[in-house]
Length: 128
Image (cartoon, rainbow, N blue to C red; front, top):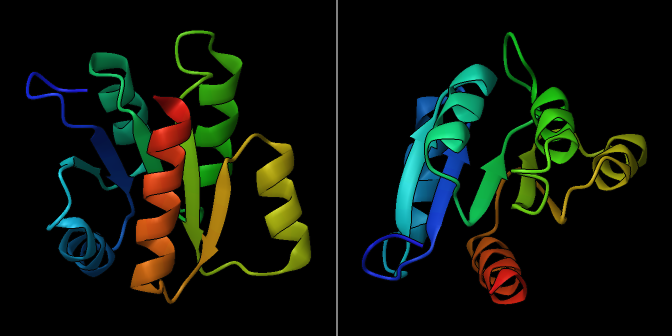
């Protein structure tokens, strides 16, 4: 939570258009949005300010989303952050791998706004 008691949501995606789309979907909600355009930037931001929820893309250059998820879950300081995967990967293997690695939810792209809003709201309620 930020100083205004608004949940902080970190959007991690290497495609600027995806980030803008997600920001637009969440813009009417009482969330403070942060963005990272790669895995390393996401890890750096989480170390500075622990968000309440991370919306995490999987397919990114460098450190991919699975590795970001693994590192966050392995660190006791960040292990409890709610993480929702947003990915074009939609095979059963990828979805199961995401959940096995500790994702709280998995949303396939293209993102349906109501599905995203519901997942974010649910995860923030569970984390509160």
